[in-house]
Length: 60
Image (cartoon, rainbow, N blue to C red; front, side):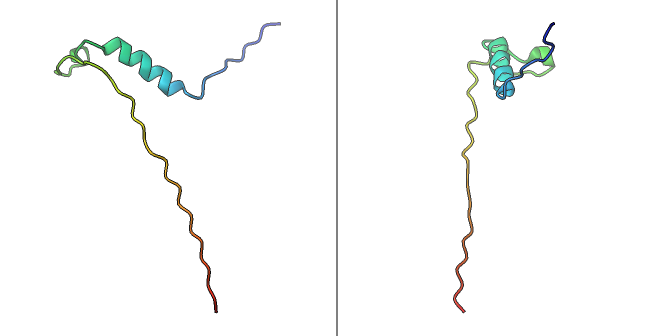
């Protein structure tokens, strides 16, 4: 029996961005109708993670 399930990586957008970055490296975006200078490199965006907790202690 053939297994038809496909495992999709949880990092699928990272994989797509890396592939896209390789495609456009040392090129312009004129193929998309945008007049840009040559793309030298694409750097990943690393956003900070913020965790906030509220602890209330009331003495009545």
